[in-house]
Amino acid sequence: QVQLVESGGGLVQAGRSLRLSCAVSGSIFSASVMGWYRQAPGRQRDLVAAITSGGSTNYANSVKGRFTISRDNAKNTVYLQMNSLKPEDTAVYSCNAKRIIFSGIEYDYWGQGTQVTVSS
Image 1 (cartoon, rainbow, N blue to C red):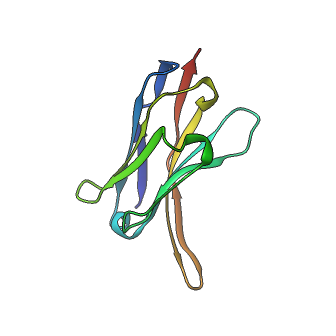
Image 2: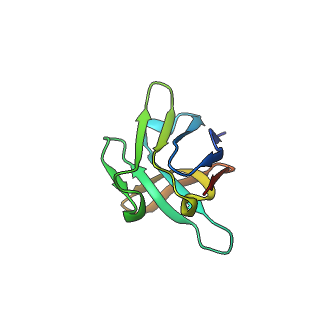
């Protein structure tokens, strides 16, 4: 059974940093595209950052230069380092593991989410 467990959220002042972690159980991690998404109240869930199995990364424009996604395949863990946090970064951050093959999405798993609150 695949499980994604996030940690590292919390309350932080603007300008400070947080690091989120997502530990993945099961054998899918190394083959997965790992992503961090966030959803603020009343808004849709948006992609924050993603990293492929080969290490290629993609970021939302709003976090480029401030956030860094990385993965440790030996620990089955993906990280999101968030620097220079802003109040508008406040949201529930969720981890995602997916694999897309020629015929479509092979799998698409989500964690339970962790709250990040940035005070001004």
